[in-house]
Amino acid sequence: MAWNEPNNNDPWKQQQKRNNSNDLAKKVNEFFEKGSSLTWIVFAAAVLVVILLNNFYTVKEAEQAVVLRLGKFSHIEMPGLHWKIPGIDRVTNVDVKIVQSTQSSGSMLTEDENVVNVEMKVQYRISDPKAYLYNMVDPDLSLAQATDSALRYVIGHTKMDDVLTNGREKVRQSTRELLESIISQYDMGITIVDVNFLPARAPEQVKAAFDDAIAAQEDEQRFKREAEAYKNEVVPKAEGQAKRILEEAEGYSRKVVAEAEGDVARFEKILPEYLAAPQITKRRIFLETMEKVYGSSAKVIIGADKNSGGPLMYMPLDKLIDSVGEQKNSGGKK
Image 1 (cartoon, rainbow, N blue to C red):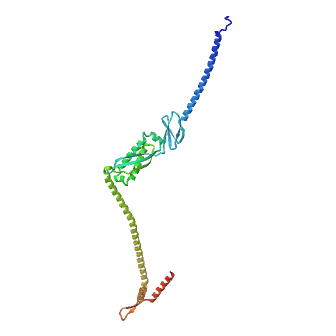
Image 2: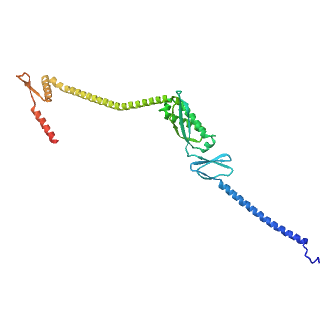
Image 3: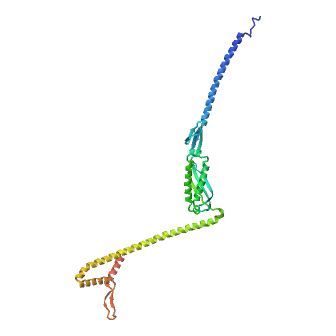
């Protein structure tokens, strides 16, 4: 019978099945929705970590980092590990320890209207990274142009002989001072370390004549040095000799003056005696004078020789004996 057969088209049972299927779908959807949110959170966290790690940067020992924030200067970072805000900060590392160089060369006109070939090398380093990066469009090129301008100005106010020979140090120093003055006005962030002025040379067309002129100048300097050496040798000797003569003259002057003063003193002392007894004083003075004269003589005149008509002289034996004794005594001591 039809009533006893199972009825697969029962609407109530079909509705119950549909309700069960809808509940399962909801649960599955909820599960997937929850899983998707977690996946996005994990993905976003991973991206954030990658961004954070990729925005760490290192400033080396010889560098300084200039940081721009939204295109405007923010600050300068010293050596070490730092972090920048992604998309907002822009970092530029600048080496402030390395010494760089530039040079200027060419044919230049001197003060006395001669042409010389000169070359100058300038060594510099970056002292202000901010000024170096943003105050000038191309600071290295600006420095080269300033060097050329300063060198041409100094050469134009210097004579050729000074540029080629003994004025080179003055040219170097003057160029450095002028160059430092120029770059200080533009605030280029550069410090001059050294300026080297290489030997200048004449143009090839007149090089032979210039070489002869330089050789003549070198000979002149050599002769001057030799003359100076001779002067330094002769002048001290002449000065010493003149000083010795002056000292001898002063000594002789003092001696003569002292003797004259002594004679005057003796005369003043004898004068009262002479006024009191002229004859006796005269006789005494005569005897004293003769005693001095004969006392220093090795021979004594005692009379005249009647046979020959000349003076009779003999050697003073007492003085001879004394001299012999002195020689013996001196020989014994030796």
